[in-house]
Image 1 (tube, one colour):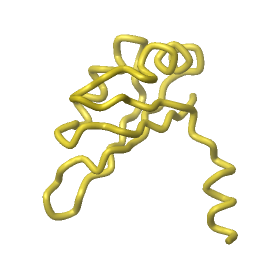
Image 2 (image 1 turned 180 degrees about the vertical axis):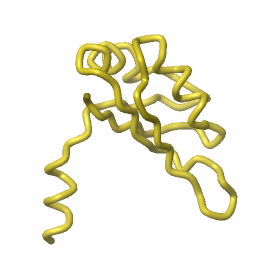
Image 3 (image 1 turned 90 degrees about the horizontal axis):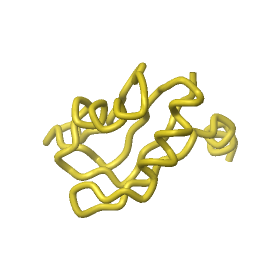
Image 4 (image 1 turned 180 degrees about the horizontal axis):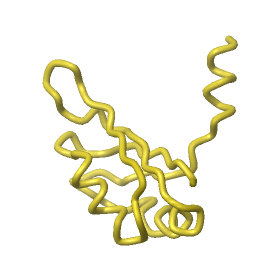
Length: 88
């Protein structure tokens, strides 16, 4: 299972729309979109979990794709980056 970080999502993005976008490349195991507490609108980033080969295909197909006047950025999540950030 690989977790991908997605950024530059449009404000009207939802977990269902992101799941639909990624399901073209395989089975989506989990979707988590960060949303504003008060307005419930998408904050522009989230994560998607898929199997390894499907995740690589999704990154190749969706990284740089324009969705809602924004160019998506999709990459594998780096678990060490979060640890480094906490130590500072």
